[in-house]
Amino acid sequence: MKKFLIFTTIVLFGITNMKAQDVNFGVKGGINFASVTGDDTDDLDGRTSFHVGVVAEISISDKFSVQPELLYSSQGATSEDSYTEDGINIMEEGTVKLDYINLPIMAKFYVGEGISLEAGPQIGFLMNSEIEMKLTASGAGVSESISLTEDLKDHIKGIDFGLNLGVGYKMENGLNFGARYNLGLSDANDDPEFFESDSSFKNSVIQVSVGYFF
Image 1: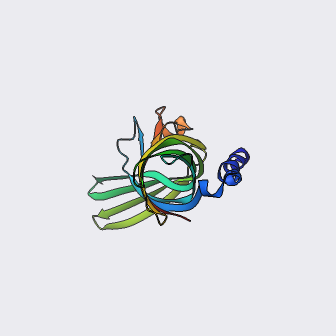
Image 2 (image 1 turned 45 degrees about the vertical axis):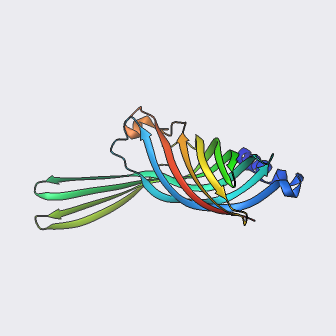
Image 3 (image 1 turned 45 degrees about the horizontal axis):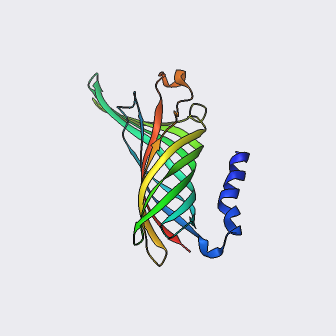
């Protein structure tokens, strides 16, 4: 974590040695449509959440710039299952919450007035991970609901690598919009015994953002 903080400081603040007109700072936030992919994830659905953070666009030329970002990103997946046992209807609902601090470094190619195509690597540091389960039983004179939360941080890898691909639009007043897909490249499974599976599973996130450059 110490190395991460040092690297982040160099990337986001070391650029102040450049000419002011070459660097624009801003903020962004938006919606995550997150999921987890892998061989044993067919029963998992997407999770809708959020991301928020700061950005710095470094202009290299009129058509090309580099944009490092520091984002808090709430990711994961959900699941839902229902069945009947001894005349009782049972509903199981689960939410896997994987929250990261992500550092994407995007290359931006301007292909039109304010329109950019973007691509770049990302490293993420796991801040929180847990699973929330809700079990509801009804019928045959029974009506009961139980909620449980279990910490997963010892079972999920602390560092995540990904590749981002996206498109953006920046207005002259600094307001900007973006859509991005984050393809997870690294296996998040750090405890095959706990998950009862040797299969890997990876993060997959679609992000829709709105931001502002100062």
